[in-house]
Image 1: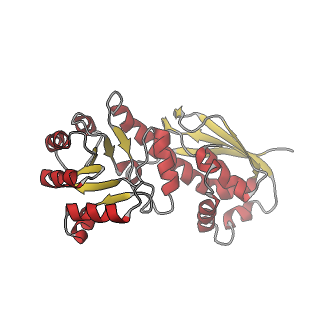
Image 2 (image 1 turned 90 degrees about the vertical axis):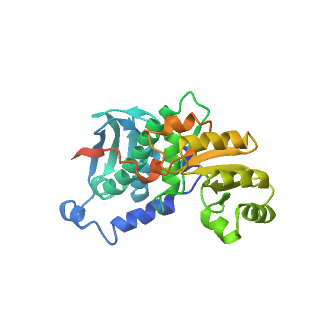
Image 3 (image 1 turned 90 degrees about the horizontal axis):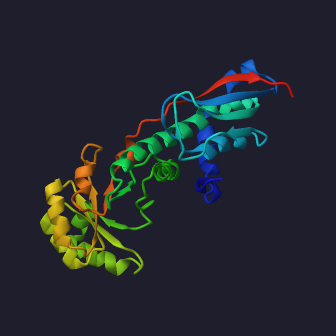
Length: 285
């Protein structure tokens, strides 16, 4: 079992998704399959990519019927190709039909994120810059989407608002300035918490350094401004670039010397990986 199903109880989220799709009954399946009948179906990849979420895919079916058998031929993180057989699912045909869409929704979404993340992470190979995700995730999908980022070769930023201090523009406005926001966070937060602050210009960067920020986010700066900011900070705080990060400009951003690059696109804009369940048929037992 991979970390997402071994260390975290995601069954409640999966059951919510199943209830969304089956509010009372699967009327179509019940019409054509009124009685239990054993069957098998193939999980086929329809485009090249990186697979993520195989255990989640399997768990959807076993929640419907724990006798369902999912035989996987790939594991999370594997690069897969168009036409490849990824798994075989065996069990009650009614379960295979009713669980199909929910199971595929998770697998396609997670694999799409892993695929896109892998393509971006490869652009940072050989640099000292680490690729991070953000909290720009689909509601109730964060644990799955952030796991997929890890599978693709990225790293996770804070998981939620309870996970770390990140002072953004509106927090700074509420506090009355950069130094005041940092000072208030330092007073309130446990000493083990690092304090990160978002800066939009070099004056804010200078103030953040002098106030003792642990991490300074360079928000929507040009590569030239970022390079100047990294020089100004001079190792006194970690640096993170955020805003308008694309595959086209990420190499230039890494060249500025920033420690981290965070990209909301990893989770909010990655297209799904096209995967299907095909060739379902009854089997004799």
